[in-house]
Length: 277
Image 1: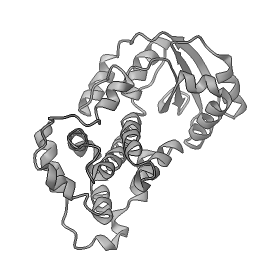
Image 2 (image 1 turned 90 degrees about the vertical axis):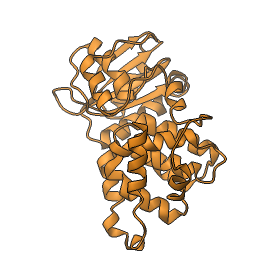
Image 3 (image 1 turned 30 degrees about the vertical axis):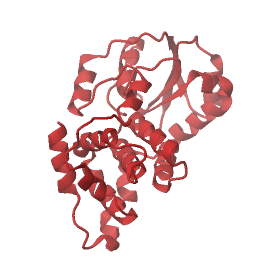
Image 4 (image 1 turned 180 degrees about the horizontal axis):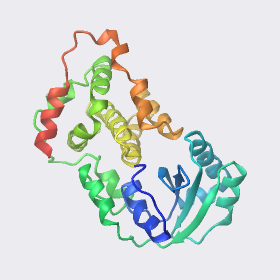
């Protein structure tokens, strides 16, 4: 998630990170971009601590490149479950990104500020206890009920039908995302539409500003089918820091004449969304 708060103290930053990520990080390095002099938070990235320690230069250079292209004026680096490693600031600055603060804290969850919790609730979400719990939110769960699931799967039946659904759904990402999440839970990995469903869900999550949810949906999609084109495109868009708003320009339905005559899939998903709320 991005741009949810202006952070002025270290404790406020610790309270904000779980909202920015969607879960409480542990054994991680988190980098929060700052978009102006007042400290408005933008893109937030998290790496496993082991990933950073294995190649700190490459990790920080990648972050600096993505955040720099998204207009970051600076950043805050936070180590979870590890003392401050000065190489993080060294390599970020060498790559051209200003480091405003470097912080370190333990793995115990920090209390989330009430105003940030309200913002999560408005999206129909809650801060989860761990990344594993976030992964479980889009994992197949036996016995999860989902009305008209076969009909919803049919709206992903061909590549054109899937892309039409994506283009129609993207402007309504916030409204429709709960239905797509429930469908992911109700769909086993072996289903023919599972990967398309997960890829569309990831792009809707990205459009809604929830990059963490998008990544775990893509993790499952690419574990099922590593070379799936839409999942690969979605993964690439996240890795290069494509902003949620930019997705609208990439998927402009008015430019897609081949969809003329297709039945509108939105009412099906909107009805499903009402049922899962």
